[in-house]
Length: 452
Ligand code: TYD
Ligand code: MG
Image (tube, rainbow, N blue to C red):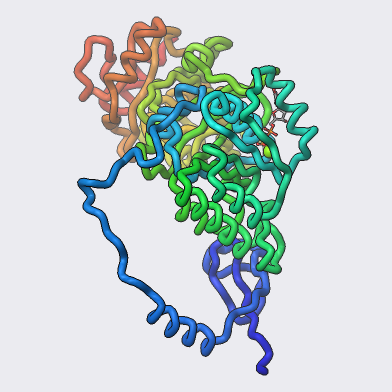
């Protein structure tokens, strides 16, 4: 018999190579290639031949006659905002992936969720990472009442877990985490492409067959992408991303993929001594400790469909080593460099020999283009040592010509600012509202409002 062939498969993206390399050419990750046995072509061909004959014609149903609630109705998680993120609660039969960095609070959130759901459903929490007593300690810390219908099992066997899901005994199953699972039939280590996608597949099939809702925990790498294969993200129904500071600050859960809902919503949490709590009024909480110094600007941003006021801070110092340093926390560094260039070119600010630091308070990450104007004004304020009026919020996109461009949902940004007692908004001149101090370009904004 011929020696079985092996190939080197990237654990990040799934690309395969004949030779081992230090870096995957496809996704540019280092040290991700792992040797795997490939089945020889003849065997695959004959298997395909067999498969061709063994198939049967599908039984079909009319779409009109299919019942949407075949497995029952959606139910709540106990966190109203998280229900919104999911598209109206947990859908029976849905498989959800909760991705986040170690220590952010995935296990905590799911245990809280589990004890809530257990009031109405039989819930099983399977952990491959923690022992029963460790989970018990956490459950005690969370203080909630734990119903009889919340069960625990420690296991890393994908076969056993899938069989348990397939038994249909539980309405809701949590699997913590996919990276610890292994299938008996696959020899590679837990966390590898074949194990993760194999285990994922098995769980999904069991969930769909019985209408069990399943949450799978997934760890992410330092860069914030899900460890292991992308394929898992394609297979599941919902991908939830849990982000934020590990220590203090806000943590956000948003759906980056949702087959049964929108991906615009976000739930904002805070970790306390007895678990995670929804932040009821994030804008107010974010502004509570604000001190109006130079370099501080309040921005009206949108997190999906939800308006939010955040403080943007800038610090501008003379460069001491000849090469100016630019640092951004919570804001894209490339975008910062671009805005600094626009400021230099279109206004009288001299920034070429200045170190510039920009920080978004509260550990939030802004991807809203309306942050441009606020970042520019914060830099200008820090650089000139002038302050912006206390009661003014800022939003608007900045173009390369220094022009201020309109952004979406101006009305909701303005409404949020009014709600929190602000008196005006520096905004693109296209926004027609009495609340707005209209600006056309960067210079206009600085000359008119950076005056104290
Ligand atoms: P954990 O949920 O284990 O994170 P993950 O599963 O994502 O790795 O815990 C996150 C952190 O939260 C942990 O360092 C301890 C802390 N924590 C609290 O501050 N309060 C609490 O009530 C609990 C349960 C945890
Ligand atoms: Mg955990």
